[in-house]
Image 1 (cartoon, each protein chain N blue to C red):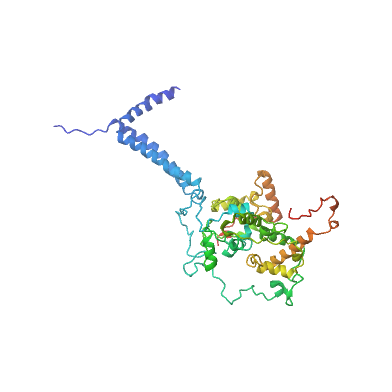
Image 2: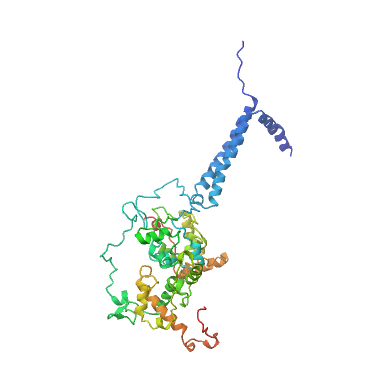
Length: 248
Length: 221
């Protein structure tokens, strides 16, 4: 205590007295500099706690941006602004030749193929792959169980009611309709590949083999909705089938 | 007339302690400004460029539940998770909102064949070769690097994407890997305790024989 008192009396008090004799402009300058020093801190704080639409500040370049192009870059070299070049018409890229009409088009002897191509093996893993792909590419419209009640369909119906921006909508097909159940696998494959009526073609989004997997899964899905309960172990204790359909 | 000698006023004695204080605080101040100001947390995170079309991931991926891979379908096969072509948008928008003003650039692109000029949000240094397929096929979810895109009205950069940040996961992958079937279920695991999440991660590391590399040449070639 004594030491602290001594420091205050002998050192700080005279310093404070001196301080009040410092010319006023210097004291003001001190205040201004101290305040200004908080501005960078405030800017940093704000930048760390908000989003910003402006381009990034990139101070040290470190070869981060190089005079090369990566996938989907823009380019001033070509008229269409793309660095990636579209296929030249009339050419076939390696591995893209659709020689096997059964595998690539679902056609066998000028008719819809009724069997899966020999290049795919229809087993449990294949059907599960189909389920995985179906859930990505088909459920938005056709719904997880294929009754044509996907969330996009639901959304579109509300938009049609309000007439938003000229929305028109043709309901996606219920995959359990007898007309679709009777379709040969080749025709289902063709529908996925090339689209039909208002449904778009999915050949560019889904690889060929995966499209066959989806066909296999659709067949399994159709079978499951109309299957004999006896086929499933413990089926006696299951709840009754919903004859209305549409509910999961 | 005697020449008057200049004497320093007494207050100038404060110069020495003042210099001591400035000498001590200024380096600290500069260190703080540089360390925080130049960090990718400050400069890169939160980058949210304006896009030519106000596409909402919150609506499409969130409310409508469209899988990430419906549009970014190359993510499982290639290094680059492609921005979808105009045709993918038109799968639905040929019928839904076909007269929308906001979608004008989309319809123009569809008619002319010119690309929509989407702005890249996540931009790695060009000497870093990140591969999307290598990660998603091993059970690293989109959410680990991109955040909850399904809740973002406008997509922004959620993580620093700095090398230190990459390595933090490569050194400690347990809380970041999951069942590869669940990579696009962004909300999966958020209500798990840290302990459970780690156990789950360890399980999938084991099942898929994962051993994240820390070699320079893995990403820099």
